[in-house]
Amino acid sequence: MTSETGRTRASSGSGDVRALRSADALHQAAVDLVTSGRRVSVAALAEASGRTRQTVYLHYPDANSVVLAATRAMLDAEVVGGDGTHWPGAAPPPVLVSLAQHLDTHRDFYRRVLEGPIAHDVSDAIAAYFRPGTRQRIEDAFGDRLPRETLDDLATFLHAGIRRLLTDWVMDPGTTTPSGIAGRCWLAARLLSERVPTTGFQPFVPNRMPQQAPTPPMPSVGDPGSGPTPFRPPSL
Image 1 (cartoon, rainbow, N blue to C red):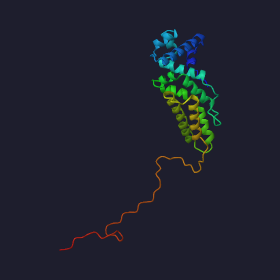
Image 2: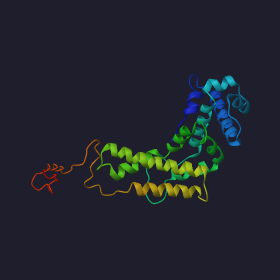
Image 3: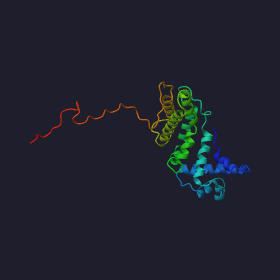
Image 4: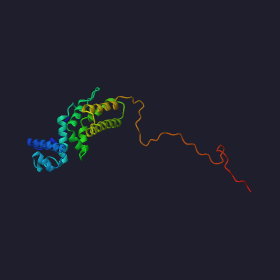
């Protein structure tokens, strides 16, 4: 899987090798600044990378964009394991193991960016590595028996669950190892996407109330069978 967002922008136009080198230097500066807990600004990125502020703005609109591009570049460089769509067997897919190892290696960096203004975008970049696999699991298990909308919903649930397990683990690993969290994610994926019977499945239809027996009308006072005769005061 590749996501050359930063490099593509940096090399747009002339394709100058110097632009690629500047992008790499800015990415490394961003990772170093975030990991060390220092403030990331355009000025700080320029100083740490040995470039000018004009060079930073030539490639990126702001400092957060540099950090996001650096994150994607790191993921592309270190996460391996095929295309991420073939998840057979009892062992976790290699892409999940590789992703967990990468997150563990750069835990200080990810802890800080997952608490910052680009947390959602960084989480999306991480999740991109297992999104195809979660979708394929659902298709393999239920693709011939459930409506498309339901397949989409199940894939979303599975994908979001793995995403949350991984990001929570980054913030608080406890005693769980990278291979351990990959195994937990994979076990959850298997349990939620095993082929189970769907006989008689009926999709939910909004605004459809269950059929109920009609309520019998209340009898009028004095009608036969309506109960005791109401009290009437005696005539004087």
